[in-house]
Length: 428
Image (tube, rainbow, N blue to C red; front, top):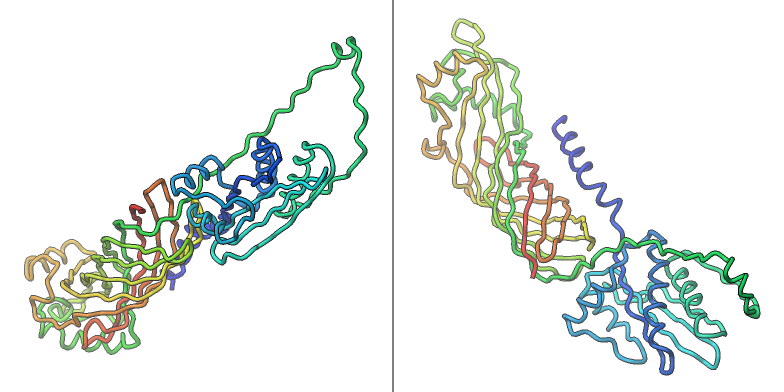
């Protein structure tokens, strides 16, 4: 029970902060201007809208310079005139964004209109849409853009229109005396976009905290002490020495896991993952040993280790961020190719005597004729965090695997393990 609680705490400390602080990624496309409007105001209108999203703190706003670079590499260009939702959604997939904002600027007489809509990249539906209009000179577009950006970002801005005062030329003395005030723009922290990649190939390495699960542990204990040494002499030395304690304890053992993986990303949120792993599972079993005269020889730990070639097939659901939390779930098939046991005394003298009589472990149980099920199947669930760096993908992960088939017919127990691993992949 303590082991399970400790494992849950480790998973919480590793992955909950990433889930809490991750924000949706949003890209703002350059404003499309109607014919006759000064093209130099387009970037200014876009910047004002972008500023409102950054100040809202609700989104991770992608850098427009990087947005333009990615779209140029994809040879992507919006149609002139009407902005189609499907085109905007496609741009979002290229950029790995959750939401895309498209902006259009038009003029009717002396009235300027700025319209904008925010599109969900996965569904292609309009998540929010707004517009604002105002009469005046072209510089009113900056105020209009500020209102539109505030509405979309959820920080409503109310503009009070007042009659423009007449500008009077100041006298030369007043101009000389008036201090010159310059407004310094606050720098914005912008993040580069995470470009959507269809495939990932990589390698991973880590460790297993493995143990055995069974409702028949009591039956297994009595059967083992009465019969196991007839098959494999010396595996449970209590028979040789003459007795054992009624207090037995089952613990987790540490094993290695390492291998390769392949991911096929269906979209920015969902992917299929296949792995080929070398995985060590098993358990350790402790008991107090006595000689024939009833004298305690100390505690003995039998460490059973099973080596598998494991093939997990998983569904991966992730939140596409610069730091992307994800969850995996699926099933696995494993093939057993090695089984060993090692006896470890806590008393040095007893250990030396045992090794001199039976030989130092670990002992190969398959060579001794023990019968184990060659195949195992399991259910897998886990969570992790991806760290994309250019074309590389780093990740940390924790997962739980529940074995479904008994490891051996005479024990009835199944494998159970919590795995921790780190990996690196190449995206393309």
